[in-house]
Image (spheres, one colour):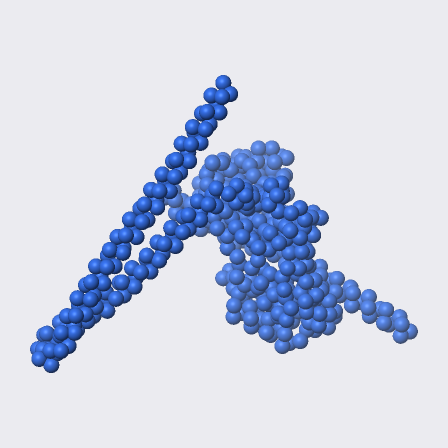
Length: 459
């Protein structure tokens, strides 16, 4: 029995290899046939071009005997000759492209046969869906050393990695993640860079997460690294930290169409008074920062389709809720996913695209009573404006929402309370303002304490 199974495996493996060989030969044969046809067409065009050239030589000899109509014909022939030369060059380029494609096909076949390359591809995909599991997989299969520095180098290279996943991993507060963040930031070279340039480089290497605590840790690490590379620019890392946030907020205010009241350079300077250990930063520095951001906004790294898949596979919370309609106030059961400061809802759990998206910006969540449904809560606009949501209509077109509130109903009281808690944690009015306020209080406390010591010494 064992011998028979072994023989069958050998036969199956032989068939599989022959099949692969035939497919490769088939695709290679078509490529060669296409290449041969291009070469034959090139020869034909060359012959036509040469014939036209000889004809043109003879015409030039008798040009002074030609009538106006014949001269126009000669001009059209010369024009066609020039077009043929261009077409011949295009054919040469196409032939070169075919050769490159054939070489890439051969290289891809070699790569597919390498088990380590397959495991590396799988590891990257796992990281994009769940960074912790992806790192564990790569370490387990010997593709990544089990050290914070090696993980940081892997993330810094970023090949095939989702930048949202990189940002989320770097922002975690576990000891390993904090060490990786330290090494990762240390790989950036900020020497002799103005602050805006350093921020552009840093914020392009990953996507800044939405959670305030993660942002705080990452920007603290950035400030320490920038001050270490440029020791004579700021008096403390607190100054660099506060000014970095001010620049990020300025970028949002200047280039977000939803912000109507654009800050002036005078307001930007006023906002940053006293942040340099109680003193003011040079007006020239703040002016240059303002002008740089006004001229060129920060580029936010964009991910491919895996970014949306990463969102749906790593939710902060997910589950069934009843959602009230806007026009007819009817209730429909929808599958909700909460992540990345957005609430997505689907008709079915198997749907690949959401029916609607509710951004958690400028909104709040509260418990509310409804006579038709129990355990209700709603997301409402803080300034009574329309929430910047969108959904798909009956024809599949994406349309903007027109609601100032979205009302949902949970099955139990516990589910309702948990949804309210998670949504409240994800709501992002603007975490930068809160963190700036805390850091400015810290600076003011340091200045007050320093002044008190100086007064005590003078007495």
